[in-house]
Image (cartoon, rainbow, N blue to C red):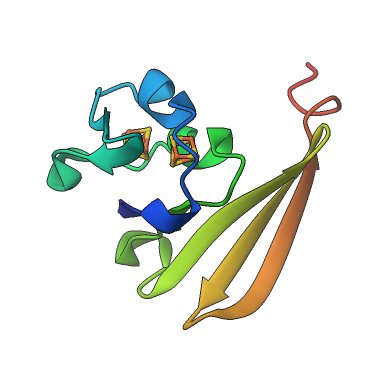
Length: 103
Ligand code: SF4
Ligand code: SF4
């Protein structure tokens, strides 16, 4: 798995860099940049934190992904996880974070 940061959509908020457990993302010239792409283990924390959809997350073949890319849109407490193949939206999974993780 890996991510790609689309710097034209990055507003330089730094949230992705703060949450990456491996400190793989750094801010450079006001934009996010991933240092050691090959070390990304696909936790998706950065994708979840990005409010501008600047980070693409590629699902690994081990998850049946291949060329499938995931993006997150957040509206209030609702997260929409969009799955694309070659820029075509295949599926959206919607999670209300206020209702999630209640045990
Ligand atoms: S997916 Fe996780 S490990 Fe990879 S860059 Fe984002 S926060 Fe870091
Ligand atoms: S969270 Fe998104 S907008 Fe903020 S620095 Fe990271 S890539 Fe840029």
